[in-house]
Image (cartoon, helix red, strand yellow):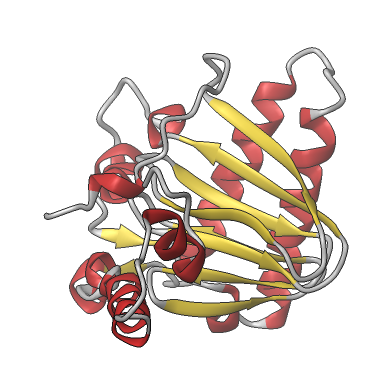
Length: 217
């Protein structure tokens, strides 16, 4: 698979296998620029906004979540003041040493991206509410520093995977082949900007502002 390394995020996560970013969201501003990484990510929002996954814009309502599959280009803009929690982890966190059914049929499929996580709009309300409850519990226990809190986080993640797997909600990669290729939207915007401003000098800073990404990407 051809992945654009310019958007790759080089982030320090304090050697933690599971990390939560508590992000301040300001209405009308970008919460984070477009980037991707090899870990899986879950966003939980306490304000309204929008998440762009590759070239697809997904509304982010207050008290909602978004699954971001590994190596998926993503960017978030806030429509109201508040906070957004970004939970980042590698599927190795959930791997088993023994090759049982869970490892070979579920965890390995997630690690290799033959199975992808769905979005909330494809789930029924009851399932969304249950996943929200589990995610809020993860956030609470993460910041509590309760002894053994890591175990509770893993338990909740396993339960979320169980709910999606048992309900047949995971997406086959074959049905989502376009998913890693949609970065072309950024190229289109940049080209359109250059065409519109052809008589004037166009800098890297100008192009970065145009597509809302960090200029170093």
